[in-house]
Every structure is written in C-alpha cells, then in structure tokens.
Length: 178
Image (spheres, one colour):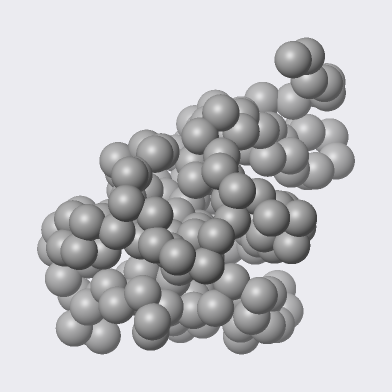
C-alpha cells in the first residue's frame, strides 16, 4: 500500500524537537483539535487505530494540517473488550495492566492524553505525574488551568471516568482565547 507523504511534512515528534522539545498551548490546541477529529472519524467508520502517538502524526509545517498515519495496529471497533494490547507501551492505559483488557474509546482518550502531556510538558508522564493525576492533585505552573484539567480528564485511571472521546472538543481548554 502506498500512501501520500505531503510536503513539507514531518512527524510530530520531529516537529516538537524543532520547537525546543515542547509546544505552547496554542499550537498544541491546534494539533489536538485535528487529532481528536481524526480519532472520531476513525471511530465513526468502525476503525480503532490503537497506536496514536507523535510518530504517527504528520504535520505540514506551512499549514499546520495534521494527518494520522500508520494503521498497521488498527482493528475493527467492537463493543466488547480487547485483550491483546497492540500499540506503543508509553501510551498504554492502566486498565491493560490491571484488568488485562481495554475498550477502544477510553484507550484512545488515554493515548490522546499522553500525546497532549508530551506536547506541552516535553516528556512522557512519570509514575509520580500519574499518581498526582489520580489523586486530582496534578498541575504545572507554566500551563493553564484548563490545559491541566484536560490532561487530567484524559489520564483518569478509571476508564469509565475518563473524558468521553466525542465530547473532548467541548472541553474548556478548546474555548480559551489566546
């Protein structure tokens, strides 16, 4: 299979490195809106990507258009739990290790939370970060309250309490005016 590789594009990981290791919230918001939209479109079409990560997002540096790529881990959406994790460990939700199974949409939201965390903080969430998030006590002084809330809502350890994929774009973080 041959897919387009629009120019001038680079994967999001390379783009972030080019910008000093993290993105400001305005740029991260612009990227996240498109990634969430892509995840929702996949879901509506019955596709569970299973490996949304920096390296699987192409970004056009001129237009800031984002494309989701690399569907080799993808599966058909199902209502029942998945038992075999397929994807990148850094984006693996806690229910995989705790229960040995996971559902598509909550896992997608977790991946998006890790993605946002990495974009704005410059590193993957540590065990301490995840513990503070689970205790509802995580914040970063350089980030807006809304951004911290968005990250916490996505990285909620209980999948049933996690932000709903279809409602992500309605979060207050997307309503902040720069």
